[in-house]
Image (cartoon, rainbow, N blue to C red):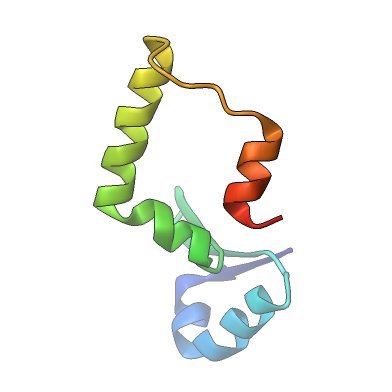
Length: 83
């Protein structure tokens, strides 16, 4: 784990972003009381950041809580997924 200043990060962004890509944990310290962890954004992060996806998930969770769901057999799920 590396802890660097925000100034150090600004001066050598590529170096630290490359380290994050290699699974190194990098924390950027900003002043005395603020710190930030650098993490790469994945495809799944982009998927869940989509407002349409988030709205649909919230709707689906509410349906499940009201028990308004149709159970599916594992075989049906696998067939749908082409497994």
